[in-house]
Length: 261
Image (cartoon, rainbow, N blue to C red):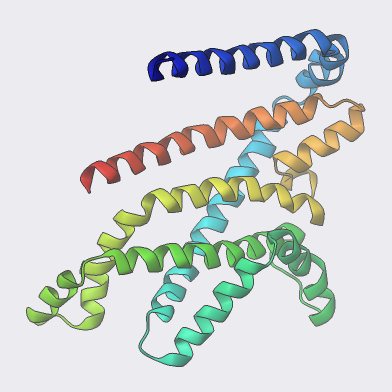
């Protein structure tokens, strides 16, 4: 059998397996139960408009705050890790490795419950504020490595040329190296933003007031109230509405970067 023929046969078999699997799902699924538990029109209508004006809005706001705060800390951590002063490098390395090695949920619980109890600390914004601080700290550890890699990806000749023109090291870093580094790391930073959108769902563990709930907490409370799973489907749809355009944007920027290289 020719290679092209064998390839066509293999593809045909794979398509057939996929169609059979889809057929089994359609035949074996309990569609009345699915419709009753996930597509209850009255329950879905009862979520409106709070799922947009409260839950989705808070999810976006918490993400933006966490990302902005994490980005600022990450920039300092990246510069510290590249510093010629050894203690700065050690501090940045310990921070990055420590918080990258911990689950974000553990950090959120620590800032939401353990640290306030241990030190008598009242976080700004209450439990939600503590959770956002935790997300800032964790996201900074991940973004610091991304920014560091971006800085190191800038050709050394750029900095050497700037210094040969009389620019100081700090001026060279601010005006030559960092702008080019951030252009390089925009796609992975955007991907980190998408991950943060989903990580805000972890805030449900520390509780929130009615007007502070994000999508997951809002959906969980609605499931408990209505004894129906339709709110989970609604929350999933809103997460996709928020994240899918961003993931497409990341893919587009990565393609542009590859073509530029």
